[in-house]
Amino acid sequence: MFNKRGFVITILLAFCQHNSYAEVAETAFMATEKTDVYYILLGFIPETSSQIELKAPAIAENKAVVPINIKTQLPNPTRVSIIADNNTHPLVAVFDSSGFTSDSDSHLHISTRIKLERASTITVIVETSDGAYTASTHVKVTSSGGC
Image 1 (cartoon, one colour):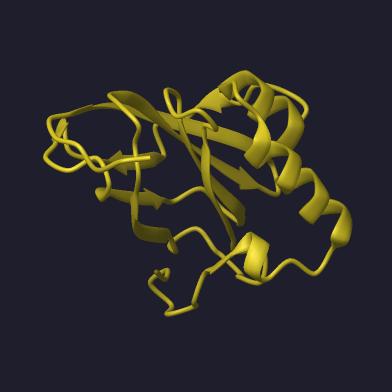
Image 2 (cartoon, rainbow, N blue to C red; image 1 turned 90 degrees about the vertical axis):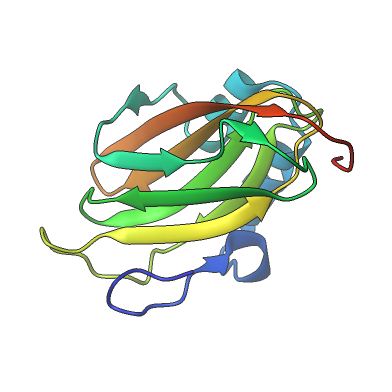
């Protein structure tokens, strides 16, 4: 998981330097609605951006390991969150990239796998120094093995 300059992205909860954000993130992970996650993490519902590319299979063969690829050319990304609407607790992951410097030709790329309880809309929030933006896609599942 790295951007094109080779910086490593770490999961926020494993590398949080600010207890206040760790507490906010813990509350967000316990939320049961996507809009609650938005308000806990951001205080508002972010706008959709065409500068975020979210790739996931239209139909996942195994809901326990659904591959997700996120790319963005938004300048100065600081945090990326992944939400699965139909999971009991929709916030799946938070990645912190605040140590990165970014210019107009750089981009952030994250590849990971998530668990789904059932078919769901996957939403990615990319926070930048200028605001927060989202992209979404729907994933259907065909087998067991998720949450």
